[in-house]
Image (cartoon, rainbow, N blue to C red; front, top):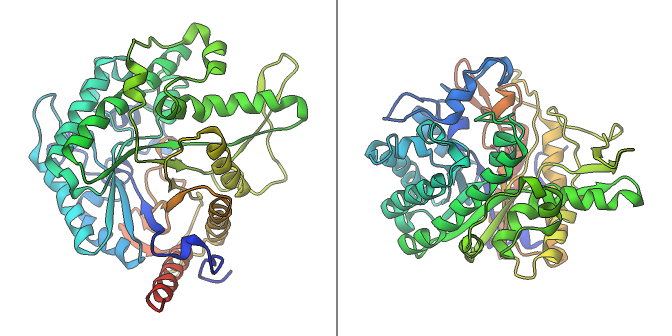
Length: 452
Ligand code: IFM
């Protein structure tokens, strides 16, 4: 494996117009959960429940980014990226209902300023799953009021930062917040229930829609959108096509349709008839406010079939290569997904690949981390994005997940997604081979662009 990713010479991704970045999120890297006036989030509470997170891990210290942010941002810059994607922790900004915590705002302001001083753009997600616990105590995303609380939080942040944030994202992966958190109970707050999952999803989408005009008013020069995880599904046999279509509808049409089409997919509404959320008149108009872009997070695909009872089951791809977390490596899925989005949405806005990456069990040996599988993963997925662009999909940027190893939710620290290795005992950061390859690719690109 060379330590530089190769892109086709005339790829649009080689031009300086295409943006490359790395991504993180607040709870996964910050630590310092009791500092700076922060209140508990649902993840602090969830981590305390025995058996919920592997190894009993939690985000108390994580990568200690709260204290090491300056060297971390310098490290981001050393990779030669155009942009840094991060999230703001709601519990640092509004640790109590109506009390804005200036310390929280200042913490993020110094990071944003530093990024700008180093010439990088800043992509900020407002909600990457760390809901203040006091809101969960009142029902969390099952309570419609939470959507209005989110709009208030978005107002506070965007009034303060305005256009200083280059690109705002309302929500990261509402599918995961709603379904893993409120339907299947494997993420915070750990609630299990079909109706609960669908109700939470509607309130999340409403939160997004309510925030959009506020963000536009307070940050008219910034871009505004929302980020979805999306898994393309494939049928095992011809007679399973309906199963694959349904899985896609539930996985991402359910979340993207209300934004881009102003309705929920009928196939899901019909199948989940008893669990339909309460949708008030006007909600879909709010949710379908125009967005400047959508973010797509892609990791893997799914293969499904109908079992003998007509239920949908997944078909493990035992012969395929998987990452350490058990997800199949399937770069073609990213091209297919982007093309499917283009076909489904005639009004598809520009797309950023806001996350893409591979988990490993990487070891630092003599100061080096050989993460060959991840290098190969990035190389093949970058080519998959290029393929989609070639076929007419308007992809404008790519963010690797993740800058550094971090708290991987219910998997704790055992799953390492970073391009940079973190030693959790010493907090030493070491660039893995994939980071070096990414940096070399970006260096070569900027040299070529300079030389015309
Ligand atoms: O670590 C997560 C991230 O927070 C959201 N998208 C998927 C990643 C890998 O599971």
